[in-house]
Length: 357
Image (cartoon, rainbow, N blue to C red; front, top):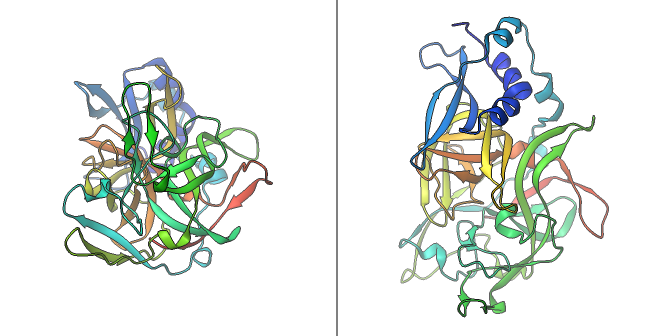
């Protein structure tokens, strides 16, 4: 079998992965994987769904394509749209909650609210709800705080509804076709985000994102360092220092509303993943250039959790997984320094200023 380096494998994925996945609908993901014995060699792994669990195997690249790949192949596609967030764009941050006890307190009403608690959009769907990833400040909005989570968690429709209300917690009152949300639990209103492909300057599709930002309604209700009564919960806190580029084999952590604090390892920084479409029943969408995390660190409800490494730097945003073997996350460098369409305002480049939780 021909040996390949990371640039060659990424080149193959960026040019052929979507075609291969469209031709074989059983493939759930294709990802660049580092060999265990030869760390400079990479191969393409495929994940196939069996009995509800994704099982990994080696993907055999068609011989005619493999024979034509050059040793000097450089991944020009990635270089066009991967932009690292520089250190001076993010100030030293305050406290991040790593663990909440007792179990399932994340589902409860928490004031001031904080990273890791449950949030939901304005919907009658009893299953809707995810994780508040973090509370942040953005350079373009000097006097506002924002929560970051997934688009499919915060937005009712694929076409964003400006100022849609976000709730914490997510308790619904009523049965069957009638329901009532407790508007005293409203914490933010949706402002911008993206579900699907970004666009490069040349007009071609870039990374696929599932991210949304909602502006906090009352800054005093949010948490930038939270101490609570020991009768209800205990907190362990650490400091988020910056944003960091994710790497293969990097150890990472999340604090999800369902799973709490979990630990795993990045298996691939360039995975193409088939995900059930959140807004088109019976359809799927291929997410490009994703983080593939082994020992699935997330379950249903953990979507929206920020992914941090051992240095307490943010590297990604959880949005999918099989609940056991793999979790999928957006690369944090693909989320920031990106142009978002903001209704009733000019398109803006979204740049970090500061994490608050």
